[in-house]
Amino acid sequence: MKGAGPATTRVGAGVVLLGVLAVAANLRASLAGYPPLIESVRDDLGVGASAAGLVQSGAILMMAVGSFAGPAVSARTGRERGLGWSVALIAAGSLLRALPTLATLIVASLLVGLGIGLAGVQLTGVVKHHLAARAGAVTGGYVVSMMVGATVASAIAVPLAVGLGGWSWSMAVWTVPAVLAFVVWMPIARRISEPAEPAATLALPWRDAFARRCACYQAGTSTMFYGWITWLAPYYESQGWSAQRAGVLLAAWSITQIPAALLVPALAERHRRWRFWATTTVTCGIAGTVGAMLLPEPPGVGPWGWAVLMGVGMGAGFPLGLAVIAWRTPDGHASATVSGLALGVGYVAAGLAPLLMGLLIDLTGGYRAAIAVLVAGGLLQAGSIWRIGDEPRPAAVRPPGDPASRPGP
Image 1 (cartoon, helix red, strand yellow):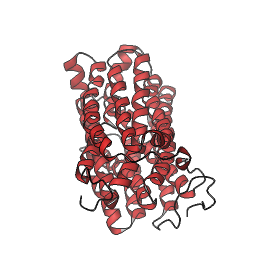
Image 2 (cartoon, rainbow, N blue to C red):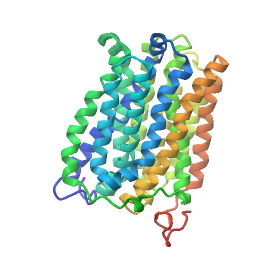
Image 3 (cartoon, one colour):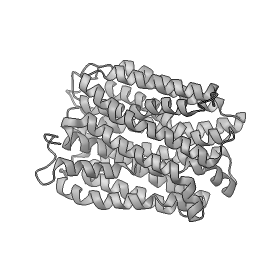
Image 4 (spheres, rainbow, N blue to C red):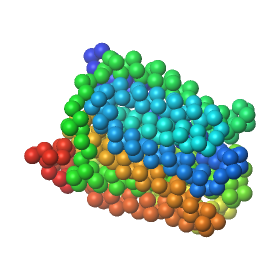
């Protein structure tokens, strides 16, 4: 990672990158380990689809709170230390999931979601400040680490529940990697920490047009991702699949995202064609979603083709949204404020999606209306891509009220 930015003279950029990857591996695992267990949770606790969806929606809405609060946390603790304490929240929430009640499950999910939301904003600033020269590739790398964690969690959730004696222990297992990530990252953070900035310089740029378009983009891609991560496995269980087989399908969906997340942002960065690659991938995501809705199990091949298309679209969508922010903001602080706004708005939309889908499933007795919500999310993302475009921004994002501030393109 030579020349990767002002990483530090005390810690090499490669060490910073390894710490980032260790943290990132925990930013989806706790969420992905829940959907394959939803039917077991519903049977054990005697709750409906809407209550089961509320658990995931609550976590994602707290991710929005964490994203909005992230810049203020950076101002108080510094982004590097703030990232470590965010992972500690994920560990605490994961541990609380060991108690098999609806109340503790909801509270635990809120803690996990808050930690993930805070961590996402700090990560964007860390990458921009310490690894700026390869922001696209590094962003793809840490998103891949997130997806590996999600893939493993969804694939082994049911076997863990069987082996450990219940769904609650299966979800509590993810305390261990979160604690390990905290132990790995905090010594790095202490050596690379930058002085905290005054909170006023980190206000969210609500009036900036570029930031608002990024927020709409993230709302679309997050709606599709979190809607499917919550309901893909239950959807195919409703088609007669076993819980374990549906968990494998969810894992396949996650695995497909890995090469897309790693390669597409790097290609967009190399060829300077962000809009082309973003449009291509969202088209794949919409096609797979519509296919799964209209023809859940095509003869001969089953739903695996739909999972691949959705995986390509959603795997590339999130890192492309973060990468365009890294490329078009002037420094780590501006990157944190724009990503805080974009991720916060995105997670609000994504948090409502699983809950709305659960309500529609209960009301209609099927999944078609619920999946239509995801199609709408894909269309919002596609429209935002064309508004963001490929041209570099003519002006840096500045805090609201700055006399030099003016809207982006």
